[in-house]
Length: 395
Image (cartoon, rainbow, N blue to C red; front, side):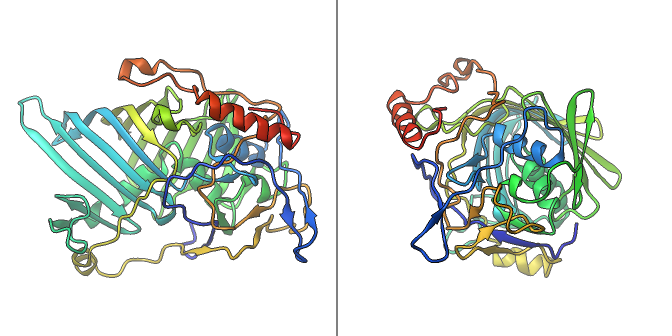
């Protein structure tokens, strides 16, 4: 991928924000007139790249708000299972992953026990093209204390894990599909209907399943192949990079957020990661937080000094109230115009698509959770009223 690709950010949300909103209109330049745009709606049987990218993000629960942007900027994940330590499985007693997609940052904090009873723990961090280990979260930053150990040899491995995640894969595919990428843009606003390839992202169909191929930001030479299931969920991501092949398999999707904050952003309940055929991580989800909690991973000065300057990454720029239009047809009135108003974390209601299919309900009670897709009844009623007021069917 061209490392100089420009990314124009729709805005960074650093707090948990829940907005009960409804469809709105875009203001005209005069500020006194209002003009509405029809949202992009794929045909039920559409098989082109734009429709698949839209359906992928939509069914994963990533497109929300009045302009249906990709609002998942950060993600917190907690799980259990095993990961490989020294060539053998280590049973997890703690596993927490904090991801900030916009700054290519991820912190994985885990503790586990080997078969001989020996305990092992680590905090693995990647931020842009810097990677390090911490003995305490935020080590080496300000007065936090602790030790930050540079690990430049792990940068690509950790970025692959970030981009091959259930939400990371569609973001990477959309990023590679355009020369100028509007971060958070609705994929239905980016290019024409009917094509199977755009930029460096291509689509094929194999045995009735959508298969997308695309490069990964920050990992030169890495090519990802993502296979979607019948519900347009990320089922499998295969990343070929040099002599290594990393495979991620996902299943048991649902809203794994706390029962008090179900917002229908769906994450895999099961994850299996293999490196060159050998299992390195096998995880079962305990809880997620997909409402854009505060996640930061600044590079400690000691790590920056030890590693030195790195190659340039795409630089995120904030929009200034502008409109994300299709780059080749800026006046396409049939597209929803994604406004960059700094509210990337604004979770508004979602309209009902003609072919809307939901992830299956899953029994969370096995892991001490409430069943998925059970939003608060009062909240659901308020949302239904707001939708009806604007002539939209309740979801």
